Length: 426
Ligand code: NAP
Ligand code: HSE
Image (cartoon, rainbow, N blue to C red; front, side):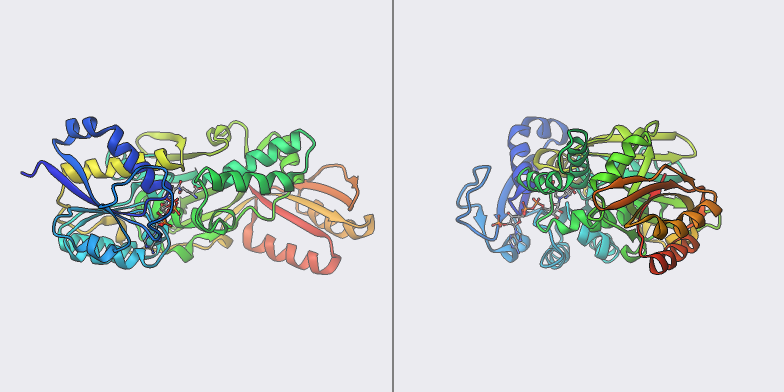
């Protein structure tokens, strides 16, 4: 058996750089655990002249991805470039060349995972993607291994570190009496500098990144293929400092949550949206650039994974973990991945939950109709407050059906002109 595992790394940015660093720093550990030396044959980038955080031998650095993935002296291709194309095509071609593939790319795995997983199976090679969901947290490995003997009933997660970091910085600003909008912009810039944000951070702040991760997580937890478009998505861009202030007043935390649950009728409902959660919830303590995944299963009852969900070293930790797995078990199992089974999903409109509403109106008259409607629905109304831009009033509803309630709110907005901010409560 060969004593080396030869690698082609596509991408030497945040994650690629982190992987090169860990491979160097921990070479002895990796050898001890696998009996193999990991040798980097190619590092593929776009721009050869760009300064790099890690030193890369010039004979290894290349822009020729085709040569790297087809090189017969390469055993494993690590796709760490991001984006849909050319990443998807390169992964497919690498598999066709008989290479194992490890990727951190949630977009590719969420939209084309089914095709690529089947192809890897057919080619009798491994396709692993632990780093694609929540950085260093070994959640996908756990779901397919140590926790596999459980029927999972619910997964609630903070799976995007950038937005969790931004919300924390906004909260700090509100506590200090500073503008939350400035804190938002500064925190996003910092998240980009620290390598947490996606190349296009719209993916983070509009919830797409969390939507892709939710599709992957839900598929492996509930053993059912989950199309990305079936995952409801809402980002954080419409939240304001007033919402964070109210979260504190109501003794709750405001987070962008990924929630997937099996409904009593057997359908799966997966969603991503800002959510108010009580202080007692284990995810309340997951702050800043951390990720957290809390899940329930019929054996272990409940469990929390908490750690760095982004950044060079944290993400590299998951990629290198996948490399160890490939070194130890280079052949896939001989049956179809159970997470590719077809199953029904349910839209968000089928659910019932509680809502936080923040009403803003220019005067009392406009507010009255909304207030009366909410009162009739059994909502708890907090006293109205006069602000520079009008009157503000906050309400908390009892459990209501999403579809019916949202239709009601749309009608109320049209009739009254009152601005209604809606945040779901866990
Ligand atoms: P990044 O810093 O932007 O690095 C991307 C790297 O890929 C760069 O080295 C870039 O080359 C190279 N690249 C991009 N397109 C290429 C192309 N068409 N041909 C050749 N090289 C190309 O991105 P990243 O943050 O490391 O993220 C990489 C992947 O990991 C993404 O899928 C991301 O979603 C995922 N991920 C990231 C994190 C994180 O914390 N950053 C965590 C988990 C998962 P140049 O350097 O020459 O531009
Ligand atoms: N942009 C992602 C995040 C990187 O902030 O969570 C980790 O997947």
